[in-house]
Amino acid sequence: MKKQGFTLMELMGVLILLSLIVLIAFPAIVNVVKRSGNEINEATKALILSGARTMVDEHKNDYPLKNGNIYCTTIQTLIDGGYVISDLQNGNNGESIDTTQNITITVENSKYKFDLTDSCTEKR
Image 1 (spheres, rainbow, N blue to C red):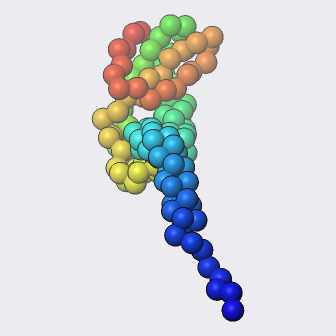
Image 2: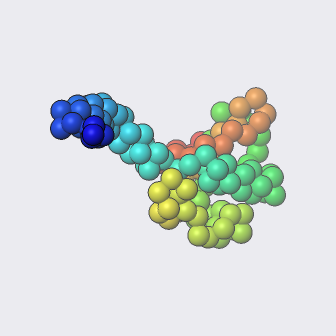
């Protein structure tokens, strides 16, 4: 009667192959996770910038359309004004978002451009 199964050499070959695949793929996977964990995910960023747009629309006199003007606000200002929810979390890592982060509102060609930044220098 013939026995069925794998030899020790076949099992060792499969383990070595799997180990090589893991060694090649692991650093790339770790880098992707690190990058995504440090940045605010796009949906949360869009929510914050939408709140900033609403705030600017409601307070147009405070943000005159003059090319080159840069205005600053913080996420906390949006929360205090009720433009975004108070418990903002980063969808990438589930951590709460730093509400002192700045939103830069730049006037270009009679339109507002919104962006999240670490620091902001206001020009009027």
